[in-house]
Image 1 (tube, rainbow, N blue to C red):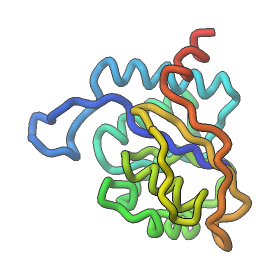
Image 2 (tube, one colour; image 1 turned 180 degrees about the vertical axis):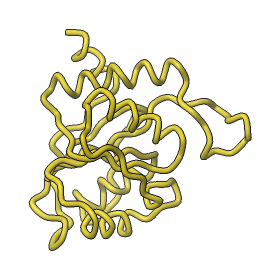
Image 3 (tube, one colour; image 1 turned 45 degrees about the vertical axis):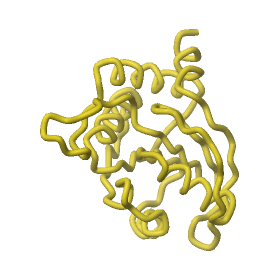
Length: 166
């Protein structure tokens, strides 16, 4: 299975309601995410399903990915991907509900780095820089019996935009 961990794109500093969960993507963030998605498509990336945090900025990022990739099964929302979520519960949910070869996971920092640490280093802290719109590809044979994954690559938004413009 390929897991693509994707940090949400650039969002507003504050929402009109003052609630962090309601912060939306900026116009610049949405435009850049569209370019990032095109860069991923140029690399030959494919998703069977997009699993996203319920927060507005993550859902909007997932919607852009779904549009660019024309995802058939669409988008699923997981409460376990909210900033206060638990990676172990997310993995249990994935194992229970989804049988896919390629899964996009849209979320937040420092959650995504913790998830990489859990999957790649058995829960040890992994010091990575996950920029807004950044994408990390992990591969694993099976999340049911082992939580070991291989870090294939981590690309910055700038690199993905450059790939899209080639």
